[in-house]
Image (spheres, rainbow, N blue to C red):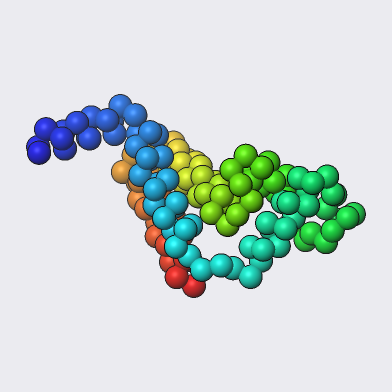
Length: 133
């Protein structure tokens, strides 16, 4: 048991980004799947479908967000299916990427992995609290 803990510490010291990603992705995936449906989620899925079918945001359908988002989600859902879970998994991947950037920025700015991990932890707590809204 102690040897496993030592291996985990060595892995974190040698490849902290890998550990940061592997810790975050399951957390965000579970949070994404368990949360209730927001009122605007249907709008985003509709926009993604419309964009992927060749329609233009602002011209062919009402869309009040930035123009790239429907294309990113549309391509993703073409590959993985047009459903809530596929869209939410992409959101979990984006949240993991953002958390990784927060960790990298903290490690660089403070020159301390522990403080960077605190920043990452606070980001994940904020996300978990948002799920309960």
